[in-house]
Amino acid sequence: DGGITQSPKYLFRKEGQNVTLSCEQNLNHDAMYWYRQDPGQGLRLIYYSQIVNDFQKGDIAEGYSVSREKKESFPLTVTSAQKNPTAFYLCASSPQGPDREGLAGVGDTQYFGPGTRLTVL
Amino acid sequence: GQNIDQPTEMTATEGAIVQINCTYQTSGFNGLFWYQQHAGEAPTFLSYNVLDGLEEKGRFSSFLSRSKGYSYLLLKELQMKDSASYLCAGRGGSIFGAGTRLFVKA
Image (cartoon, rainbow over all chains, first blue to last red; front, side, top):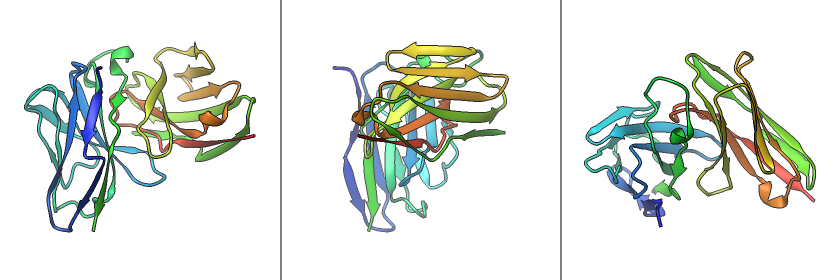
């Protein structure tokens, strides 16, 4: 079955520690994204990647880092520099990347993983 | 600038029709997407529009007016399981509305 997975589902970390969240997809999608969602709020884009070894900052990239060494994988590291890391983190992928000319199409549809709920103790 | 606005909450009755509005101010518009998110779960794709008019998919339809910067999601024959948040978003994920929480009552 094709899909997008995230692990772990729940994660606890002590203040001051870095932590890495996993995101894997076997949909052969070019683009991958990381979002943060706080209670009762919408999604805010942290980073996205449209191709291997390349990624762009989103609206709230400070305190986070990513890598895209393989097409299937886009891990997110929450560093100790992130002041309020407790949140629900969602990874998504889409067949095509967003930064191209022309109107959107079905290739821009995003598929989301189940999310990781991070709590800083 | 880029901004998407949606009502925070709506309540409707099982079996009824509800319309969830979304207004946007974005330069270089290139498409509007609707997602459904149940509490504690990931969003799932519902519909998208790039041209003016109505796109129908079963009980769900989405409408777009580019000149007015306006879209809506129409849900027909409401069911209890439709209680969820509904998010509208521009292409690429950098613009997501805060979502409208829909409560369906019996």
